[in-house]
Each structure stands twice: as C-alpha cells, then as structure tokens.
Length: 332
Image (tube, rainbow, N blue to C red; front, side, top):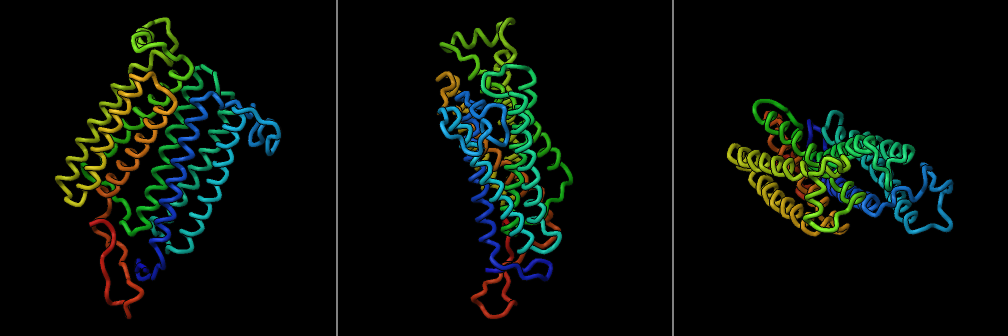
C-alpha cells in the first residue's frame, strides 16, 4: 500500500504505523517495569551512579535490587534505539510538514527528558525509601513527562495511518483541556499514593483509613485520601466528554466507548487495589489500565480536534494499475 499526501506518494505507511504502535507498546512495558522498580524499593539498586550501575557498565555480582534497576535501565536504553529508528523512518517516508514527523520528533524529545528526569531521581537519591517532599515534586514531573511521551507516540501512530493534523478550536478544545488537566492531576496523585503505599504500608483497611486522616501522619499518607476523589472526578469528565464527542461526531463512538469501558475498569481496579492494600501486582494492573485509558483519551481527543478542512492522506493500492483509484483514508 502507498499513500498520496499533498501530491507525494508515501510507500508502506501501514508498516510505519504498526512500528509506531509497537514502540508505544514497548514503552508501556518500560513504564510498568519502572513502577515495579518503585514498588519493590529497588530504585537504589545501582546506587547514585548514572548511567553506570554502581560504577560498572554491567554489574558483575548484582543483588536482586540491582538486577531489577539495571533491567529497567537496559530496557530504557533499547527504547532510545527504537525511538531513534522511528524518527529516521518518519523523515524518510513522510514529506515535509507531515504531522507524523512532528509526532516522531516530539517522541524523541520527551524520551530524552524522560531519561534526564530519571537521572535526576538517581542523583538526588529520590528513590527507594526516600520520603522527602522533594521526591513528590520529582515524581510528579516524571509522571507528567511519561504521559506526554505516551501521547506523542500514540499520535505518531495515528498520523502515520493518515489522520489529519490537529486544529484546536471551539468548545471541544476546552473539553479536551479540562480532561487533560484532570487526568494529569489524578495520575500524579496516584503516583504519590502508590509511593505512600510502598513506604508506609497499612496492616489493614481500617488502619490505612485511620492513617489517611491522622494529622501526624506523613504527607504522602495524608494525600492518599485525595486520589480517589480526583480519579472519580476525572473519570466522570471523560465519560461526559466521550458522550459529547459521540453525539457530535458519529465516527467518535468507538473511541468514546473505549474510554467509557476503561474508565469503569480503572475505577474498579482502584477499588480492588484499596481493598487488597495495594499489592505490587495490583498496582501494576491499576497503572496499566490508567495508561490504556490515557491512550484511548488521546485518540478520542485527536479525532475530535482533527482538521476536517484538510483532506486526509489517500490510500493507493499498489496492486491496482494507475493512481486514479483513490480511497480516502483516516478516521471515518
């Protein structure tokens, strides 16, 4: 298959989009392993050395915590190569000003900032059992950057399939902006809550609730009470936004239904996580559903804000002679 974009024939766009989707899936795995590093208290497994691990390129006699942390760094290094290939491929396949190029460049940029924030966490020793207030700020920055990186990778795959570039305007912009703000607030509060569960585990649900409202408890513990409220508020707004988008654009119904389903799964996962006192495996499930919900929300937002005045790419079946048999691509 090939595409026509502004008079240029673009070969094999589906392969690029599939590769971008695979890189997105890989990044989800890296994010989940990073959460496992935090949940197991293994963030100091390589000491305060970066990018080396305890002063070595490859640790020779590693402890379990070192293996966990080193694996995270190794998978992050592979991610750099994967995103670099994505960027080169985008510039080789797509013409100037194609949005897929922008998505790939932004993915590379936020992957670089992701690495820098990770290095900062290590050098400042905002890892393992560090319970300083400064760690909350660095953790929030890390969480926000991670969501931005996942959004850029999602949009790169989306634009690679031929979707039109975004044209923010009108009421949908405000609906999306509020959704973005609420989601990031819920996500960052969730990251701090998970850290509090790791550093100050509760022996029972009743004891945990008592800790949450104890004025003498650590800040991370007292902030746990706000996360469910923010999560419900964000989920309610996403349901409202999905309903508005589906009513205005029939083609948005699939994306809206995906958001609704994942909101339900996320709220359920959060409740189970609370009842089970946040075991590591349930924290991973909770994070995965949150990231999938974020991706679904990004796609719904992209569909809602795409520039309908500009034609999408045109799909050309290379097996059919001539270039006069075009089929409009992109979301219907």
